Image (cartoon, rainbow, N blue to C red; front, side, top):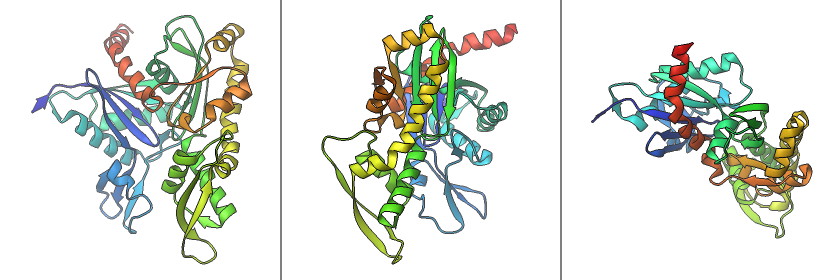
Length: 335
C-alpha cells in the first residue's frame, strides 16, 4: 500500500522518541536506544527491543542512546534510528514526509544542522525545528499567541528547558543538562556509596519511578533491588526506602529549582506578574518525580501545575504546530 507524504511531528528525546502523525495523533512511542553490531555497523534492534539489551550485550554488540543531553552524540546511528521510526510510521510512500522535530531551547547552530541533516538522511522531504518549551506549552493547552506570560518547565531525559513565553515566542529561556538521566546517575552513585552495591541504569530508573521523591513523603515506601556487591563481587539483594531516594535526588532537584529561579530573575516585571497569577506549568517525564512540583512551589512561592499527559506534551504540541507548516513554507517563499 503506497501512501503520499505525511506530516509528522517528532519529539526526539534523549530517553524516548514520540511520533505524531497529522490527523492520527500519537502513533509511536519508543525508547531512543539502538543496538549496533560493531563489526559490520549493522543496526540489530531499535526501541524497546534494543532497550532490553542495555548492559546485557556481548563485546561485538553495543546498545547505545544516540542522543546525549538533548543533542545528537552519534550522527550516523541517529539517522538510522530516525529512518527506522519514519518507515514504521509511514510505510512505503511516494512523496517523502515533512517532519517537525523538537530541539532544546539553547542548542547551537551546529547542533541544529545535525538534527536537520539526520532527518533529511532518514528520508524527510523538509525538516522544521521547534523549541521544546514552546511545543510543550502548545501541548499543555496554553494559548501562547496572546501578550501574556506563560512559564513552562519541560524536564526530559537529557535536558530541562525553562521558558517564559508570550506572543508565540520565548522571551527568556534557559536549558540545563540536568534531567531524568542525571537523577538516575545520582541514584547509582548513592546506592554505591551507601550500600556498597553497583546497580545498572535500568534498575536506577525503576527506583526513581516507583519510590523516588524529592519532597518528604507521609509514608515511607520501600523496594527490593538486585545489584553486585563491591566487596564480594557477587549478586546481592538490598531494600531501598523512599527516604533514601529523597537524600539521593534532592541535590539534583535543587539544580532545576535554581535554574527556574534564575529565569524568573531575568523575566520582565509585567510577565513576572502574569506568571505569579497563572502559575508555572511542568511537562516532560521528569516532572512526574514525586514531590518536584511541591518543592518548586515551596521555593518560588508560585503555584505549580503538572500538565495533563506530561510525557506526551511536547509531541502533542509539535503535532498541533504541523497545522502551520503551509504558513511557514509561504513565509520562506516570500523571503
